[in-house]
Image (tube, one colour):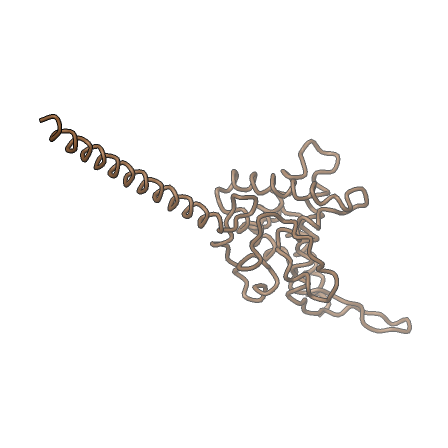
Length: 232
């Protein structure tokens, strides 16, 4: 009887081992699928690993081509090391958050300190999200749209007879001027003040996005447009 029972026992052990191997293979396949899913999700480009560019919308149709915040212009960091000054209009393709960071590197002592500027922008976006509970990139885009003057005045004439003439401002210059005004307002607000640069910039961007006259950029824009209107 012993001779008959032993093969049965060996067959059962072999079956159990086969089942165990199949179970392990299935678990390994599931783990691999999970890994691939995680890798696939990592392709979503988020600024500082947090803020998505997917739902950002440029509400002014004339500025869509000059505010680079969607598609190929979505970046993880506002530091692409691109050569945007080599050719005219090339800086229009520079990510808009990076352009804001570059505008903060002003007044001699700050020139070239891009890592510091990137850190200020990162803290600014965190503060904006805490205060507004919105996507901070959208707030930045709205602030730029609201802060760009649509009309300006230029000097016309020569030989001693000079007068000012109102002219329309191009969309590209509107974006450039808006960035300049936002950065200048934040810098002046934080100078000799307990508030940090990030806090002042966040406050300036939020007020500008709302169109509030508490914003330095909005006040300057209104003043420029008022002068231009009187020189038509």
